[in-house]
Length: 204
Image 1 (cartoon, rainbow, N blue to C red):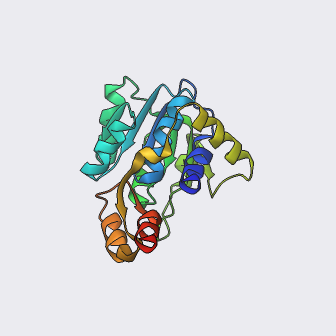
Image 2: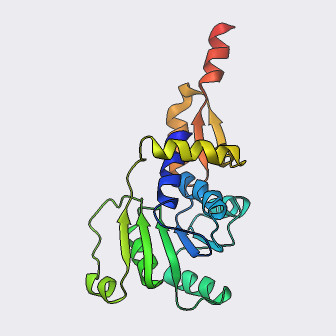
C-alpha cells in the first residue's frame, strides 16, 4: 500500500494545509487516502468531489467535511455552505479528468495553490491569463520523494492513519480480469489481488 499511499502523502505535503479549506477532486484510492492525511496535517475543511456514489460514501467514511458530485456548481455550493464564497485555499487534483481540473482551478481563491497528481489522457486547454491574474500556484506531483516521503508515511502510520482502510475488494490472482474490470467501474475503493489466497490453495 505504500506506493499509492506515497502519492497521497506527496500531494498532501505539497503545500501547508493547516487551517486551510481544501478541495480534493477525485475519490479513487489515492484521493481517498489523501483525506485523513490532510486532516492530520491540520486542514480546516476537506471537500471532496466525485461522480461515483459508491466512492462518495467511502470519502464520507474517510472523514471528509463535505462530499459532493462533480462539477463547478457542486464546488460553489460547498463553498457557500462553508461560508467561503471566495474559493478554496488549496486544491488537490487526483482524478485526471480535464473537466475536473478546470472546475477546480475556477474555484480557487486569489493566491490559491493547486497540486496536480491526476494524469489527463489528453491535452487540457488552460486559461493561463486567469491563473496569472489570480496569482494561482500550480504544482505537478509525480510519485514520491525518496526517501523523505517514506519516512513521512511511517510517521503517519504511527499516528493511526491506515491506508488499507480504502481496500474494499479482494480477488484471487487467477481472477485478475474480473478484478480489473470491477475496479474500472468505479464501484470499489482499492481492489487487491490477494496472493495469500493462492498460496493457501497451493500449499493445501
